[in-house]
Amino acid sequence: MARRIESVLVLGARGALGSRVARQLRAGLAGARVLVASRAGEAALGPGARRADVRDEASLARALDGVELVVNAVGPYAYDPAPIVRACLAARAAYVDLAEEPAFTAALYRAVAAGADAADAVFVPGCSTVPGLVEVVAQAFAPLAGLACVDAWLSLGSANPASAGLLAGLLHPLGRPAPDGEVWFGRVVAHEVAGRRLAFGRYPSGLPRERLRVGARELPLRFHAGFDRALLTRALRLAAPALARLPSSSAPALARALAPAARVARLVGTPRGALLVEARDTAGRRLGGVE
Image (cartoon, rainbow, N blue to C red):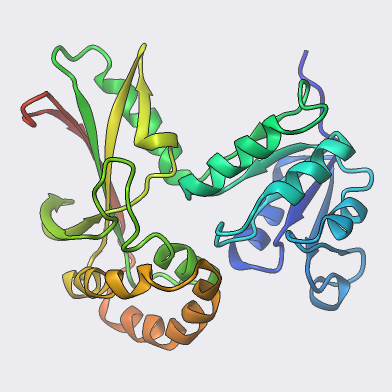
């Protein structure tokens, strides 16, 4: 029988994503105590908020007191998750995050495996919307004969607001190596999505090793992302080599510096986004698609 969750802590509740997660949990978990935390604690989030830094295990241990489930919304996910893992193991709290960064997920699994008492631990990383949608939609391809791989194309509406955390997460993988030897946003390709010919670059899907399960099979996934304005997508391609030479720790500062440019991009973009998932055979021929 499933156990009812009585207390949830949202890490990163000061950010755009974390604050939204906290609101959704309060609306959806009737009777549960939804706690919020950030590095500034009550100074930023008001009375009752807890102070927690994802890099400081002592602060995490204090913040997790009496908590059954931790939702980690602290992005970009370019830090070591080991302190959070150890704090969750010590508090016997379940863990969920919204990461789309494969390196973060791999590091989290390593930290869990190194835990002294991880046998009954519950860790569910990578619960971001897009990877979940791709996996669910791709199940429609299970009966197809000759299915060899899945392509996904995500077009982002550039008129939608983008927080500094979202920008930092978007920029961090650019120019870095993909598991198959390609480079994230190493080139831009055109593809028709939502009735328009749009520009896309290869981008991490958030799924382990860029593979997904379709029925009983595990297949390679080639995920692509781009904006509704080709100029913005091509700008990311041009910036990718320089971004790859920067340390991961510089992503938040760079995102803050680019925030004014993102606000300008909103003036020329649209709010419309689209996701196209396609099935392909070994020769690359399209077997079907869901948009």
